Length: 170
Image 1 (cartoon, rainbow, N blue to C red):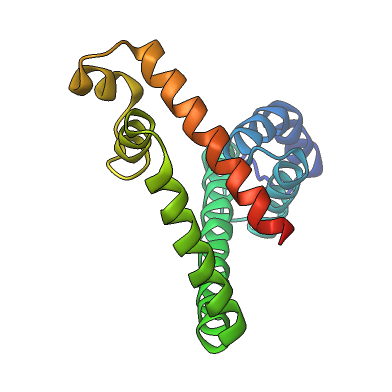
Image 2 (image 1 turned 30 degrees about the vertical axis):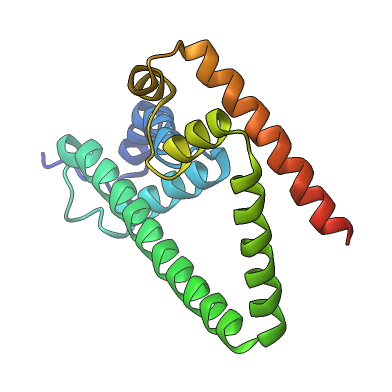
């Protein structure tokens, strides 16, 4: 007797056996319970639609493959959307002279504020934010403790935040 996933009792037993595990797998991938539920539902719909082609022994593999592919397709779609949005925003900012002027003024004032920082704070800040160095790398390069780097960064950021708030107030 050739068992078929199209048999409702077999389909139901597959759901009972793999539904929760597939949900957990999908939730791990998406970090979102609603999206995970959608992926599980879509995978089981695809299994039902192709039930004649999938044996009960292959159902688990089929479900995970479908859920994973749908997840990857969604990620690829989001990347395209984000790329389009960033290109659109870039186009708008290049055409809006008021935005460009405000942005340029802000950058100039921020550079002046960084230059006005005490030398130790400015050095630590630039090494961290421009050179992408960790606090321990900065400490080693400057021959100071990590705590000293933390203190310098805290004071630099505090000063720069105050400058930015002052710029917003104008």
